[in-house]
Image (cartoon, rainbow, N blue to C red):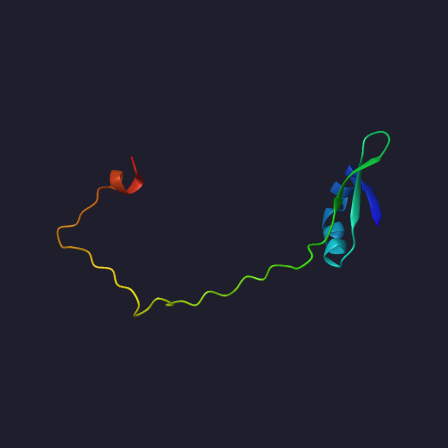
Length: 79
């Protein structure tokens, strides 16, 4: 595990994030005594977003508006 001061962290932030992505833990030191106050650790399992299928409810639901249905801009905005 490498340790960086706050100033070094700011100066090399992108590089440090690349190291974290590669699985390395980073300690952050702060103050005159350079005490470790935090750690940046890689996420154990990156969350993968599922792709959304368009039209998933097609044929399963319908929406019907009455002919006399109206809504003012104030009602729409909740004013």
